[in-house]
Length: 148
Image 1 (spheres, helix red, strand yellow):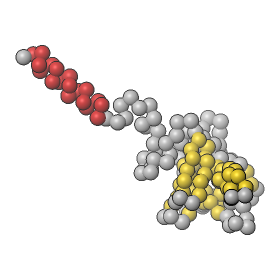
Image 2 (image 1 turned 90 degrees about the vertical axis):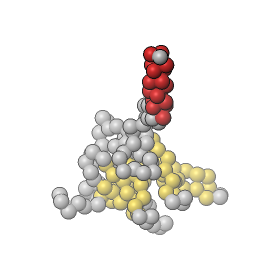
Image 3 (image 1 turned 90 degrees about the horizontal axis):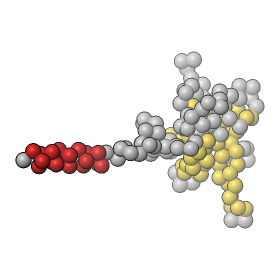
Image 4 (image 1 turned 30 degrees about the vertical axis):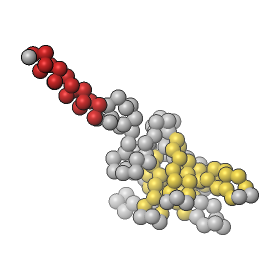
């Protein structure tokens, strides 16, 4: 009787562990809360992101570098860098606050309301909006915060 009770408890314990999808998965906690599409999952620092089945981006989530895929039938695909506008109005490849000690998931890139694309620094809370037209190169512009 004791053996049966121990086996039943052990079986319930094993089923509970196996049912928990994050058990044994070292990447289960690399998601940013509120990210229902799980686009912030990053194990090495780079992500390939598709926005509304029309635009494709490559992001280095450690330092904020961003590239947009460009290509046409007569011109093969290329990833072109998207630059930030710094505090002096110059184009730079990454935010001024980036440091060599950054971690995967520090920078998150995504779409808001199906219209605009933004980059978020999860450490400082700074947000950049992607702007540009076919005649002007894309760039990331810092969005001012009213509380600062």
